[in-house]
Image (cartoon, rainbow, N blue to C red; front, side, top):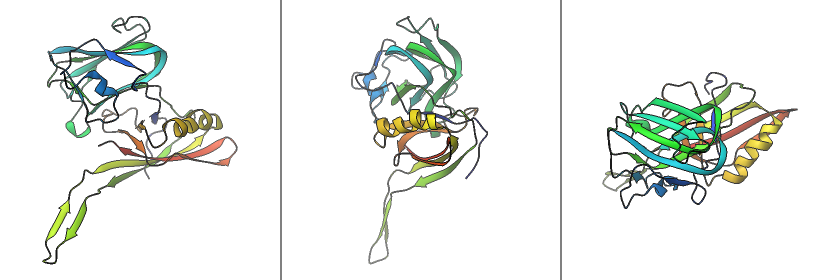
Length: 266
């Protein structure tokens, strides 16, 4: 188990970008068969694709239907690779999101490489807004996004160190013939992580861990970043599903250990 710097863990289990809960509109027009509603689908390969790419493009504005705390905006399975940059603006009252009266972040670096094809913007302290506008500048490829993530972020209050274990699994199947020929049914590989948080408070177990288990469980995706200060947040984070509900144990009063395992969407 490795131990990153203290206070570097970020968890988003409450993604506002769900079907029938959020409207994604305005901005770029879409390829007819690849609409913006695809960004709200759990299948990250069912993408939205812009039909009118330009050197600077207003991709979309998301309407959260109410003012909500926002600690992360992420685009999963996206193709805004460097040297492209992003701009994120959050507003409480401008339906385009353009006035950015809650949050403005321009010239955000594009995705470093296709190995980890997601754009991640952490907002600290969290902004409170309703309309989230996403722009891409110096567009290289026709913009695509597989999954939109907008949500609040849990930062464990005690900022204690935590453990993590890197996992890899390959469900490929190998078979052998009588003549000793090797046949391999190649399946997609997955990377995953097992996290162990120490010193979690009772309040956090009740307000974060238990709702995460009850409302998300093993059926919906969560976002975990283990190094919020990284210069490559796409690499140092995971968007995927828990293998099983998080386990919480209490060895001491108001001192919990929480353990869970996340496997990346492929």
